[in-house]
Image (tube, rainbow, N blue to C red):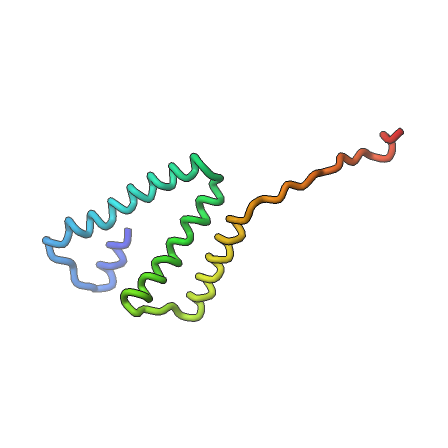
Length: 109
């Protein structure tokens, strides 16, 4: 999908030797990610799975900073903070609320 915008931007096309590597980088993570998502949904709720998957962006940015010295902008830092806070909120145990059954006044004895 990104190949169209890449070609349109006028960037040089990769050599024929790198196509197998690029194909593997595109297909293998997609297959593994899809498999892990399906397995996760079998064990936890779908919304929790999505929150975990959204943390991928945070870890990608973290690894880019550690290994390549590429830091996020202010907006990127806020987005990373939102991802972390969302993951923390989602991972908190659910509180069980004991509800009292309320009947209309006309039905009370």
